[in-house]
Image (cartoon, rainbow, N blue to C red):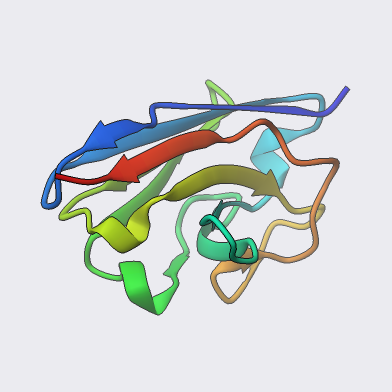
Length: 126
């Protein structure tokens, strides 16, 4: 059964850092592009970043470029999101997702496998 388990969120002050993790199972992780999405209160879910199956190609949404870094460990079937210089507008629930293909479509996976996980809450506030 396809499953995503996100972790690493929390409360952090503006300018701080967090590292999110997403452990995946139930599909061939190293054949899939994977990415991060977020949903802020009262807003639609939006793409944040995507990494190709090999890890060689990464893309980021404009608001997070230069501050966030996506990476993956295919042996651990885990994707990470290092978030630095956090801002209050980064406050959201963060979710990961995988593509049935090995490529990204811009900064989101091309297509999406399965259902959303429970996400991890990130709150940036002083």
